[in-house]
Length: 354
Ligand SMILES: *Cc1c(COP(=O)(O)O)cnc(C)c1O
Image 1 (cartoon, helix red, strand yellow):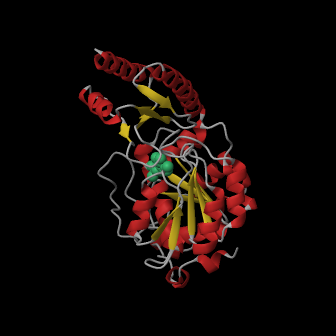
Image 2 (cartoon, helix red, strand yellow; image 1 turned 90 degrees about the vertical axis):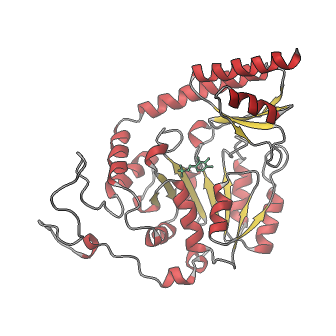
Image 3 (cartoon, helix red, strand yellow; image 1 turned 30 degrees about the vertical axis):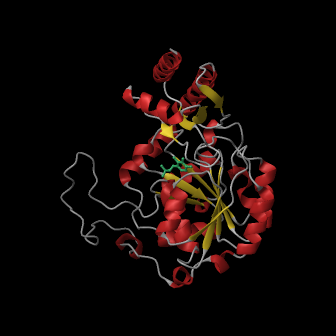
């Protein structure tokens, strides 16, 4: 696969924005080039200077942590949503190209595709939420989508896909394949990062929003062949990662034990909540999950949703989505939160029967 053949013409031809600091080569003492405020900052932090266009130290540290052999195979974005959007903007010609989605899946993919005015080819998951590999490959060969997005563990179903299935897709489609691993830390499966160098068309994305508990700072990552990452860096906003985010994440990476502890706790809570919730008889089914959420299928999902809402407990109603009839998506919380949810559901169940 030749990556440059997939890039949009305008992206290939354009020059990237040259920031003031990038133009100047040498050792500067006084910075009068970027119209910043030389007196300082009205915050206590020193934030008067523009951040590095690419925070090099952070990228290097992430490469070490993730065991990526070259930091230039990493793109840093304002959340992984930025990476998803930029991949579409770099490779997909509006009103001409298509992408392939595998519903039910994360809603931002179709939002980004709509913003970029791209055709969406849908190949539904099987009713057990596995990949319809034959159909995915056939449609990809017929319709040549520029991009196929595979979310594993999948949101909202929580399941992971078989490695063999994904590998077969990677090897047999004429498209880029983006694997969204937002929830990989909660899964027993290893990341596709281990196999990044085997597939020229593979893009893996991960985020600080879930396992790291840092949704508020907006940091996402894309990992791919350097050629793909260079293109994303060429078209991104010059200062997409702010200094506050960079400093906090650098500090966090000095000691990753807190994240690991939280992930272990969430996995224990997931097992507890799924086991206890399955005992409540308004429930039809609890779907297996390798994420920090799961689907629970109710007889009357909308009524349960409304009841929980009255108690101030908010879950996600996914009952309108394909194969998710009657399903609420429940995020695993802290023990006391999970117990409050369980109490509310038990109360609903008792009132339901009387
Ligand atoms: C939450 C989530 C993300 C994270 O997006 P950010 O922009 O990094 O916060 C990405 N993909 C999926 C499937 C998600 O559920």
